[in-house]
Length: 116
Image (cartoon, rainbow, N blue to C red):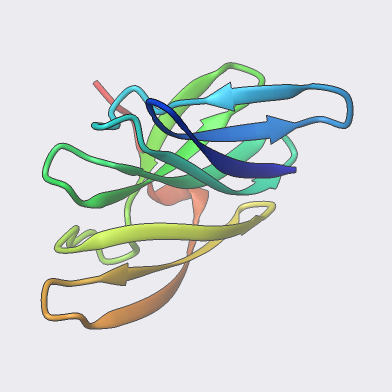
């Protein structure tokens, strides 16, 4: 199970494996805001608040404990990217823009961006 909670110092994602909780906090998040929204195998997806106060999609590998960004399929990154579900290699989410347009999308893990 994946989810998030609000603590005294911000919002954090978590993973529950049936016996223990693990807190996850994306290192790129500002204001300590990481939201985990889905899990499939060792892959956890969600979003974090980035440096420009925009939501950015992430993939967290619970085995290697590494984070990677996931772009929306067109790669425009012109708004908030919120990932909501994962099933195997498929990821669903939506993007919002400053003009309050919302577009849903289906993408795959091949759209991840390795952080440098």
